[in-house]
Length: 160
Image (tube, rainbow, N blue to C red; front, side, top):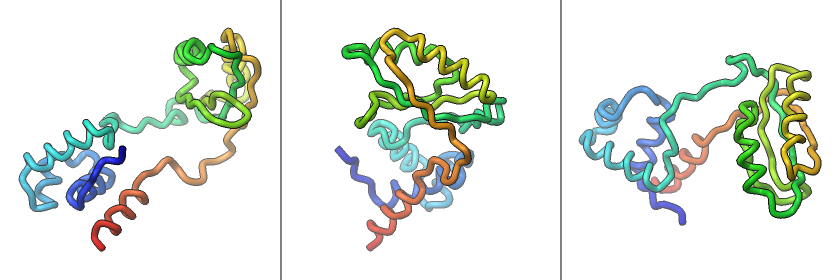
C-alpha cells in the first residue's frame, strides 16, 4: 500500500533532507504551520514507514573500510533464515537483500582492502548453506543512495 502524502508532507520531507538537523520547530517556522502539525505529520510518516530513522549517515570509508563489494550468494534449499542470521553476525556485511535471478542473496560487504575482502568472503563461505559466491568490487560510486529526486517529482505532481 502506498501512503497518501500531501504537499505539506512532501515539503516536510524535502526540508528534512535539506536540513536534517534543523528540528521540528524550524521546519514549522519555514513552512508557516504549527509545530504540532509538523510533529504529527512526521509521526504519521514514521508509522507508515515513509521515514525509516533519524540516525546519522555514517560512511564506512571514513571508519577505515574504504572497499565495497557486492557479493551474490547461492544457497542450499531451505536455509535462507539461518544463513541470514549468520551473515548478520559478520560486521563487514552491512546489508543483505533477497534477490531474483541467478543468486539468492545480495550482500553489501565493506572491507579495509583486498586482503580483508578475501577474509570476509571466507567467513561468508563458511556459513552452512552457502554454496557459492560471486563478488563484484565497487570501483567508484557514481550516484549515491538518494530519494530526493523522487520526493521532488511527487511534489511537482501534487502541485499540478
